[in-house]
Image 1 (tube, rainbow, N blue to C red):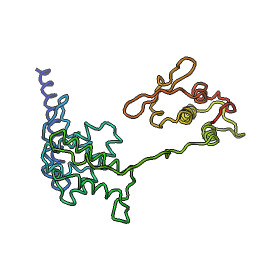
Image 2 (cartoon, helix red, strand yellow):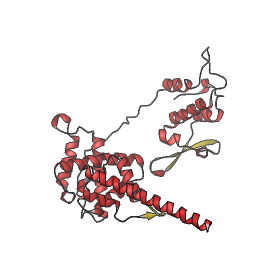
Image 3 (cartoon, rainbow, N blue to C red):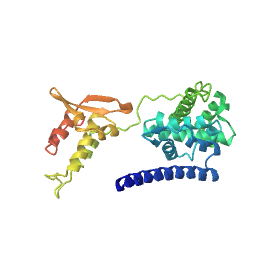
Image 4 (cartoon, rainbow, N blue to C red):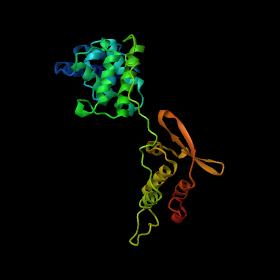
Length: 300
């Protein structure tokens, strides 16, 4: 009997815990509604199609991710289109976009567009290509001319975010067509990258300054491992022109031998691997650690 009582007590505690969590989520939505931060019709997004994964509700957690993007709930223009539109809006940022940086950038663009539409009393189903073209024109107009003063790449990013969201609403049956599909952004072509390239002298100075020096200005015989690690990272970036995020995410198995040479394997955007042959100077910093003849390194 004591064993059965403990089982019953444990189940009762789990039930009470789940009820308390669900009640707190509903109370938070009610407080947002009373404070005017969330439209009353948007509160249904917490209750619609309560998807269950492993016995846990995922809709409140999706709204928590949405709040991290700066949204105080589902925008009014979206919630006014119905509960399905609200759920589709939340699903767009939580399930459709996987890259966190893209999620934040697109969330900022969509939030600004929704505020602009709500200030003018525009409904979601009333959007058309003329309205969107006017908004894109406003983004690129200088501030002195009552515009937002965004650069051309920023304007193109805002248009891509709005177009992708509306297309997601179309595939979900919320909108009949995508009004942003025919809107064109500003033309932007660049022939030379903006990323600065270190000169040979600057690269040598940077790599030599990482290892601590003694009183006479010579490298210490046993530098800390953190200095050797940092110098190896920077050497890989200097001699392979790889992105910072690709280098710092490398593992030991991403530096492999291919015949008499070595290869770097970088994880690029979109989960794609890119294999490049290692520069012989980068190999010296990686293979020999502190035993590097600095005079033999050619910075070209």
